[in-house]
Length: 143
Image 1 (cartoon, rainbow, N blue to C red):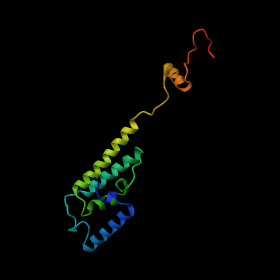
Image 2 (image 1 turned 45 degrees about the vertical axis):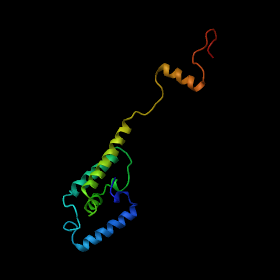
Image 3 (image 1 turned 180 degrees about the horizontal axis):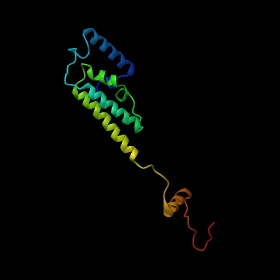
Image 4 (image 1 turned 120 degrees about the vertical axis):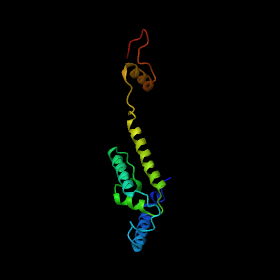
């Protein structure tokens, strides 16, 4: 499961983030705020890893979108710094993106289905299309 914010509609998430940032600003700077429950979170490392995954998403043309797939470093860092975010949320979010990228890569590695190859496959294809054999019956000329 991802965090609550990664699954909220974008406008609701932005309102939540802005109100949270406003409250933290009134209480003091974000970095020194006592509202940060888990001081052990390395939000810079999390944001950098999230950006790296987004770049991979774009390079591989996987097409993943949403807040978890943002290329905005500050968005990832601000989410990480919210007092409701715990280490398990960071791990879950990171692992979700990693799994999605692996699945995308595996799917893109699958060969595209193409036409049958070789004479036997061509005869088989003709039989399927025409409902008849591609060889003439003995004693009758080919049409």
